[in-house]
Structure formats: structure tokens, C-alpha cells
Image 1 (cartoon, rainbow, N blue to C red):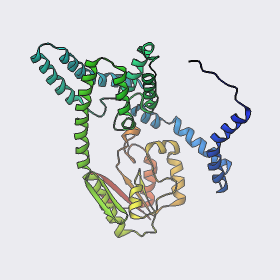
Image 2: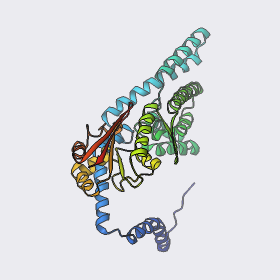
Image 3: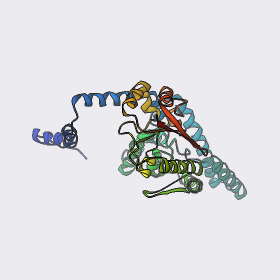
Length: 352
């Protein structure tokens, strides 16, 4: 089959470019009509640039499998060994002529597999598919369906290429990658073993999810809806909601950091229009000095700190691992109203 490339007219190219640029042009036109200036655009660009260069974002993308790190290779190799070992044992059991030995291998493979199964069990799949694709490219280059399937699997997994895990981005395309593996591995014994392993993994993760769901069965009911989570988190948040209901007015502003907008929504209390979240990434980009300068002007009625764990961003706890100077500013200029701690802590400060 020969592909013929025809000459494209200038008008067609122009229409293509205009269609691509039409949506951003409309969006930016609206923003400029609302009062945005060139300085705002430059400031936004600088902020995005700082975010892209920040160490916390690099750490986050490394732990989520987006960026390759030296430690990632060992992590991938370990999970590969934990997953492939029981699959190989199952494959050998299907090839055994002696039934007792076959049954023994299946039992051992199942037990070892279930011990090591976790949401990270398939973390190496994108790298494995790429390796198999390169290794057998000549074989598959004439099989269009397999070729398209493999290429699609590689492309959609780029978001989490160096560490596919079903706890984050990987949950959206793990199933597609499993189908691709079946297509690339034609050996029936391997396919059978992989199928059994996937069934077992599904059962293990299913029970883990049910346990997680049961653990998050504690709910808070308000006039604006219901929210459910773990008992320790729900109990503390319920106490915070009760405090807000009894001690604040609907006109009071309340900023809950590092994150807590859901509380603002449930209690109909205004947060801040700009700094309504303060995960380590935002702190690294803006810094304590800018935060203090900003809140010195806005002075919300209440500022609440929680001990939410930001471990995915390297710095874990606000006021102890990051934003310490800003927290000291709050402690100096606000009065501590209450400490709520039922395993999860809220420190409530009110403007003096």
C-alpha cells in the first residue's frame, strides 16, 4: 500500500491554524475584557515556570511514575520479580506431566502471588510492553491490529510510564495495558498463567477496596450534602463543622490550610480567592514572604491549620516541615481559639 501525499492549499492550512487557535483566542479575549492586562499574563507565565522548575513537583512526578529516577529502576525490578515469579511458577505447573508436582506449584505460586499482590503489582507494565514491542517489532509490523494496540498502550501510559499504579493515573488504563500484554505474548501457557494471576489480583484488590470503602463509611451530614471518610478524619471534621456553626457567622471568611475547601462549601463560609490551598508546591513557588504580605492585606477572620499529610510532595506537614515563617506570622497576629484532635488535628486561629 502506497500513501500519496497531495499538496495542501494555503487556505486549508490557514483554516486549520485558526480552528486550533480559536478556543484559546476566545478564552483570552474574555479574560482581557474582564480586566486582565499584559502584566497579569507575564505574572501567570512566571508562576507556571516556577512550578515546572520546583523540586516538590519533580518529587511528585517521580513518585507517580511520570519522571524517571535512579531509584525507580530498582522499584520496577522488585515489582517485576514479585509479579513474574508466581506467573512463571504457574506456567511451569501447566507444563508438568506429574499432577502432584503441578498442583504443588500452583499452590505455591498462588500463595506467593497473593502475599505480594498490591496496587503496585502492575507498575512495570508500560516498560514491559515497550520492551516486548521493540523486541518483536519485525514480527508484529505486518499485524496492524497488534501494532496499533501496542502503540496505543505505550502512548496512553506515558502519564505514568515509569511506575504504573492503580492508586493514581494507572487506574484509568491498566485494563488496556493488560489486553496489550495478552496480544504481545502468544504462548498459551503464559497467557493462561497471566489470566489466573489477573483473576487473583482482581480478587485481592477487590477485597482491599471493600475494606477501604468500609473504613470510609463514617459520614458528616449537613444542609448542603453528605461527605464520608475515615473515622478519625470524619470525627475531627465534624467537630470543626460544629465549631463553625456555633461560633462563626456566615459572613466570616475562613481559610483552611493546607486544604479544606470542602468544609467551606459544606458550611457556606468564604475562603480566600487566591490562597485557598497551600500544599508544598504552592509554598515553594510563592514563599513565606509573599504569603505574609498577602494575608497582611486580606486578613481573613479565621485561619485553620490541619496536619494533613502531604507526603507525595516531599514536605509532609504544614507549620513543621514547610511554611514555618507564615505559621509563626499567624500565631503572632491571630488568637488560637481551639485545638481539635481525634487522630486528625485542626488548629483554629481567629483574627485579633
